[in-house]
Each structure stands twice: as C-alpha cells, then as structure tokens.
Image (cartoon, rainbow, N blue to C red; front, side, top):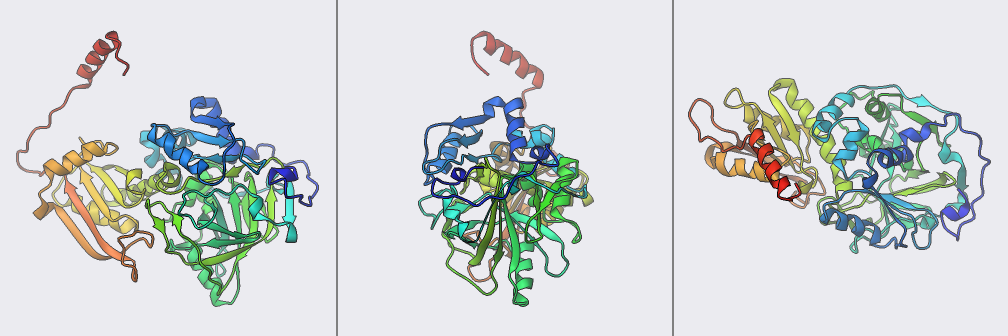
Length: 484
C-alpha cells in the first residue's frame, strides 16, 4: 500500500515486500469473504462511490439500510481526507454468516455449536500481506486512518472492528477478542476491558507484576474469526485461534508480529503495542450495543509502537450502537453456547434464539419438546447460568417460531400464568454496560418465563393453516398479480 493509502499527510518508511509464501491467505481474511459475497450474493455487496465523511456518515448509512430492510456488506470507496476505503456491515446479515459455514440461516446456531468444538491446530506462515508496509516510532500516526465517529455522543473516533490479541502472562496461552478503542492521539488508544473475561484477567496479571500487557490489534479479518472470538466456554489450554480453525474446518494461518504475538495472516492492518500498567485515562462515552451512550469503562490505555498494513489496505469498521453489524455475531455465539449447555441434560431442546432487538445478549428464546413438568424451569436456570449477559429467558413449545417475535409474544400472552410460570432470580452478576445493573456491584434480577402448554390436561387447540392450503392460496394470489 502506498503511503497515501493512509492519508496524503503520511509518508511511511517502508520495508521491502517479499513474495508471499501462501497466495491463498486471503481466503481466511476479509478479502476472501468479500469475494464469496460478490460471487454468491452479488446483491448483498454494496459499493458506494459518493464521498462520505468519517463523522457519522458511515454508521448512519448502515442504520438507514436496516430501516429499509436491507443488510448488505458496504464498501465506502471514497472517504474524505483518506485514500483507504472503509468496509462495514460484514456481520450484519445472518444469511451471509451462515454461508460462511455452508449452511442455511436456520441451521447456523447448531452448525456453529458443532464446529466451534473442533479445535484445529494453527499454521504459522513466514510472510503475510499485512507485513508489506511497516511504520515505527514517529512515523506512527493513527489519526491518519479513516476511523469513524459513529454517533454524535461518541467522545472521539472509535476503532470498533479491532481484535485485540494477547498472551496470558502466566500460562502463555493467547486469546483474541473485541474491545472498543478510542482514538486519543497519534500512538495512543483508550481501551475498556469491561467484559471481565480473559483479556481483563491477562492485564490484571501483568499489572500485578508491574508489566505492560503486550498486544496486537488486527483489523480486516474474516467474519468466522469474529464468531470464533466470541466463544467463551472452552478448556483453558485451548487457543481461540484453534476454535476459529474449527469454524474454517482447516488450520487457521497466522504470522508473527515483532513483539512475538501471532495474528491472522490474512488481516488488512495490524497494530502492535502495550496496555500500560497502572495508567487510567478518561475513555468514553461510546455508542454501545445497548442502544445507549456508555460512560462505564475500565479506562485503560494502549500505546501503539508499530503499525503494519497491506499496500492496498482496507479499513474495517463495525457499525456501533444496536446495528446488526455490532450485535448479530454475539447473538449467534450465545445461541450456540446456550444450546450446547442445554443439550447436555435436555436433548429435547430443539433450538435457541437470541434476538438482535434485545441487544444481542439480554434475552434468549428456547424451543423445546416438553416431556415432563419442570423441564422449562430447568432450561431457564441452565440458560441463565451459561451467559451472564443474558437476563431474560422464555421457553416455548415446538409449535412456536422462536425467530418470530410476534409468535413468541403470542405464546407468552396465551400460555403463561404469572403466579406459577415466572421465575425471578435476584442478585445475579450482570453486564457492566447494562444500564439496569447496579452501578456499584453490577448485579441485577434475572427472570425466566415458562410459556409452554401444561402437560396432563386438555389445553386450547391452536389455529393453523396447513402448508398445502398456504401453497394453494399463494398460487391464487400470484395469478392475481400479487407479489409474494
């Protein structure tokens, strides 16, 4: 990538590029995904050539498309002040994510659940495309990247598609995951580790030693990487990259950074740096997945030492707030995690759905073929215990479409007796970013609803129209010129 790919203000010193040892590295990166969409779903790849601003235009365009019922991958080819294009909404379409696993959208949670339990060893390659251009020292200037301001409430431009990679200072096992990154200067990012999972623990362990946590931030990777990075329940010695390899059904190809960390070889941009020990600076507010401005943050600081990128790099951004691009991956991974837990003891659980309209986290619908009274309550407690972000669980019968919110609400309205079918669990661990969680303890009350029919006695018969009858009237309507 020429220097002007970042900005006309930047003239980076370069390292000479060498021929790539693996010309197919792109298949496991953003470019391979874009090629798949263009070949199989050409109507779902939208290229916008009209110049746009980094301030508000990029994310608000995704929201307008959603309101129109569309969820295409969007490439903004001309971004004012930058020669680098911006790609967004790569994870906002369930059908495209299912295509990454070669399954139908309805089968995505089950396929994800099965594949993410295959731990495939990684392959380390000698050279990667993101090593074509390297900037160090005073040449590092993050302000030259087309980092969007997503909502007017955002305190600064935010890197939202960055996957932070780090190693456990104790065990040496690495991880990768999403963490919001606030632009604070040429080589400085604010970062919040509020999920209280592995990255938070790694930093805590490094900080106890008085050491920084060495990290790498990767931008422009395949959606399967994002899906795999959201898996939380797996053995402690397993690498997230091995889970991602299971989703690809092939070894995930990695390349080494200068700081010794291994990152996806197919990435577009890689930032090397450190999360500083004992340093806290204001971070936020940011337009979070809850649909609210979030001021809650661990207020950590990441200093970038080195920037690598392809010569023709694309900048990847995730639309923030309640955009599907921000939420859908967490829906699918939570569906798979909860389904995996429930099936261990309740094989009659048929499916799980986490709607994106409930922030991709806070509510789960469970469909089961009930064989005994009390099974819905068992499913409720198991689901609530699987994922601490989830605070409402609704269990329904097999005749209810859990992907249709109207059908689920109908079951709640007609099959629930509040005095016996609603379970409350106070004092549970909640999400820090959940505005209903206690501001000091981040605890809250969780709720389960049994919206299944009672067994052992007659219950009202549901009205249904047979598939045969539906097909017949569809033909009649088609002859009348009605588009269906």
